[in-house]
Image (cartoon, rainbow, N blue to C red; front, top):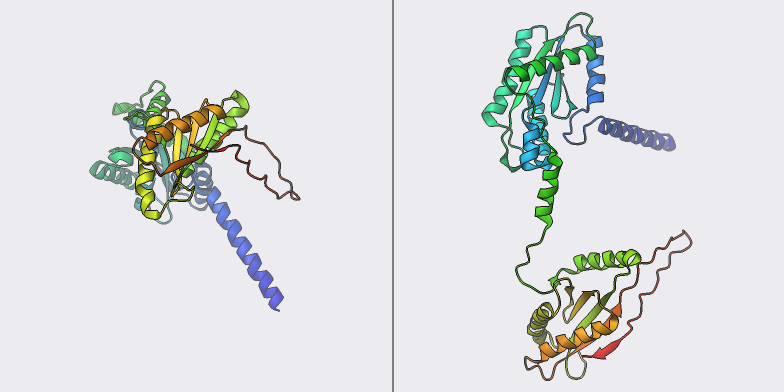
Length: 347
């Protein structure tokens, strides 16, 4: 008996999970409401059950201009805002879906009066006029809503076509015909470029946290496969005169000054990071291992010029190699041992 119960519970859980996945597939990826195909399917079922009904078609005004001026992410926020507001305004049995682009449909079963449907349209438009959908960056936008009443012989498709024609007529009459902007994606690219570009305020190397440094390091390893670019990594450690680690109280001042010396000695295209409490890891571009040693010597000279007679720097230098492409099988779970440091010298 227990086995049957367990089977039934498992079957119920699986059925519930399958139902949930099916419901998720019906939803529009951006707005979270029904996608067009799912809304039309439910609308057809509702029309088969009832002889009456009204269709409201809503359009987000000037969405193309919003995309042009603020970018497509901002336009997407406006669409999500519109879907959320319409969700609050419909009744439990109404069907709300994204008809496509900036259009939304609402099917109202059992609606028999065109005046009732028109009043719903007026409430929708007033809601957006009064509060203005805000969306991303507090962008105000409005909505145009039209309605058509179901007629004998209407199908889902014919009802949608009549509503779409009514919306086009309404937009044309009010001077709201949609703009055909020229290549608004170019503006997206410009905005992205402006967001990504770095404004360098102070010459010198590029200091980053370790995880970002690791990403740059691996990106260069991949690039070496194609370009043959030369790059070198240098690990610089602060130690005392006997080669031992400094005391905690001594490290902070020394490491802060060493970081400043590394920044000013290296070029703008080089990268460094604080690797540990007494170490910096440096990545120099277009540099061989021998050149890396000379760079470490320059850093040492600048560091010791400050009077640190008893403190020295130890550096380890090695050239980057092309990233290795390997295929791991189920039997091969080993990892290649890290490459041995090729050089260890006192700077």
